[in-house]
View 1 (cartoon, rainbow, N blue to C red):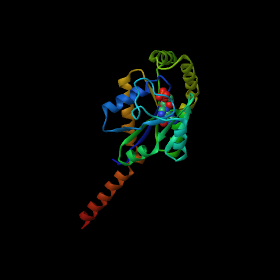
View 2: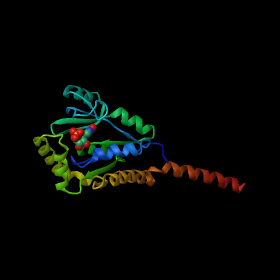
View 3: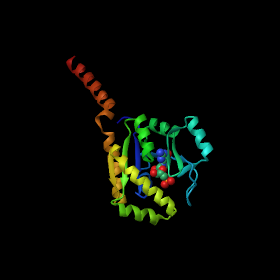
View 4: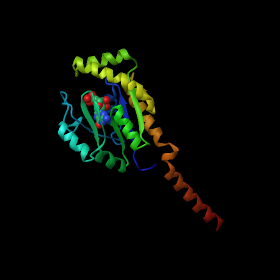
Amino acid sequence: MSNKGLLAVLSGFAGSGKGTIMKKLLEKYPEDYALSVSATTRHPRPGEEEGREYFFKTEEEFKEMICSGELLEYAGYVGHHYGTPRAYVEDQLSLGKNVILEIEIQGALQIKEKFPDTLLMFVTPPSAVELMNRLKGRGTETEEEIIARLSRAVEEADGCEAYDYLIINDDIDESVANVHRIIESEQLRMRRCLPEIEAIKNDLRTFLKEEEK
Ligand code: 5GP
């Protein structure tokens, strides 16, 4: 297999469970994936740690990151900025790791434009009612934030045809298995395996020459 990692994006509505899918995927397959930690201007939620969930930045610091070209993509989401640090992603890909970005749709589309080979997956709960219940149930947002995130979900639903796969997150373990399967299959696409085919072709030519001697 080619030793260049695959760049994959997981997006989804707030409350879709994409964060949990990511966490479980990394727990289950720690050797296969590298998770990019984003920078954000939003405040940490209880239990979140600097450098683990996010690099928490001031608006000023975030602007500096944009100006110095440190971000691969960035976007605004419900009053705050979020962006993907470039260096980590590039380093991990060149080490042959599959890198997963858990980012919203605007950022995903920027990534796809820069790297057309990126695999885009979109996570949704099985229904709108379920989404509403999950958002309210997790208790990490105010009523106002919940409304803002729901209205953003309506916008995002319009853009999700640009994605390659839909993950309907009814059962978390099944969703984790689906994401892993999709990535594994994606790695076997013919266009990603051309170096392997080339190597076989070269070996075959060598054997043929030896046989003909
Ligand atoms: P939250 O505040 O719930 O952690 O994240 C809000 C949204 O921002 C989620 O949809 C999440 O996927 C997205 N997000 C997180 N990091 C990034 C990033 O680096 N870039 C972009 N474009 N979106 C991000």
